[in-house]
Figure 1 (cartoon, helix red, strand yellow):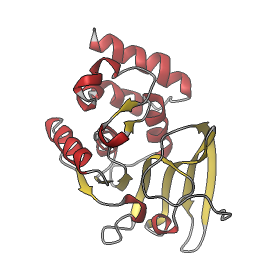
Figure 2 (figure 1 turned 135 degrees about the horizontal axis):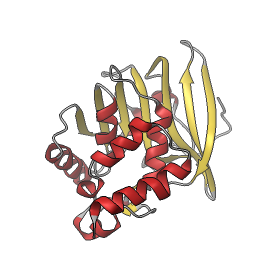
Figure 3 (figure 1 turned 180 degrees about the vertical axis):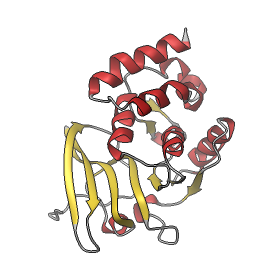
Length: 217
């Protein structure tokens, strides 16, 4: 397989048509080697428009979903980011190129080891993977400029929203199958939040998050 041609096709045929037009994001996807974060058994699928299986029943999100989430977070180089669900470490790698520091929480020990190894091999030193239950975040490190959930949840826990700085934003895929919504929650003050739902998709569930309630932002 011609890796560079496959990468180019992924960007031009999957990602750009999905309203990802940020030149910096598109460039980043051309230089961060996605294939290096894919388990060996699935290397041939690295650039396919699909979720890729990972140990522990988890998966890498489809490339276009990762790219759109990265674009919509609109990170700046001075910002600190919390990721929930490290997976293979690929999203953490992308975030690390856009932010000053990334803390990625992963509940599965095998994935913690995989993500750490992949990030080290990629020469990324400003992303740290910790084994932890991401549904409660990490109060000792917050508040954060941005929080990204690399998977879907029925609803966003208050515990995570409380760890946003004023002006900070949380990106998650929220809802129930067959259609979920990409959801951006921006903290506008100590007590107020603004929510937008710019696009629809479906993604596998993150572990240990609460099920649906009647609460809305």
